[in-house]
Length: 184
Image 1 (tube, helix red, strand yellow):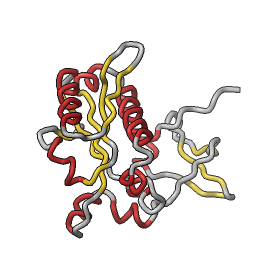
Image 2 (cartoon, helix red, strand yellow):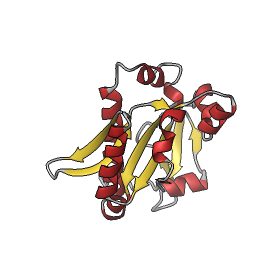
Image 3 (cartoon, rainbow, N blue to C red):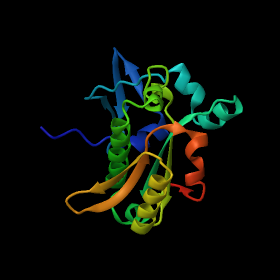
């Protein structure tokens, strides 16, 4: 028996072609264009009302309403983005983010950021620096300013790859990141 053809997600989402019949979802298979039963279960959960109202301009909306939104900053190295597989760099940012949250798990801002009422509307800002020197300098600047963060150092290579702050009110930390570019 031959394995099922690979489903091209971009092709599927661009074509918006799916047929619902007999309680089963049938999707076009990229290699043949034929409809075949979907072999794996896909669960699509609707976005909660709070997340829907916050995305994608939740920070701007919060500022307009006078709230000081809690935000976690994640800073990646552009040189690694250009030379490593994208998934590897994203994983580094995830490591730093989770670690910063865990290290500050008893902090009031972190508790609010991760609370049931905010869990679907977390705000992260992902920025970039040019390379190792800049990430180390930023980490020192944050330490000097008393801003809790995690500088992620990939082991066993001992490479500083990224950093993430614990959640802070945006007004408290945004000045440290004003000169950095959004990661694109």
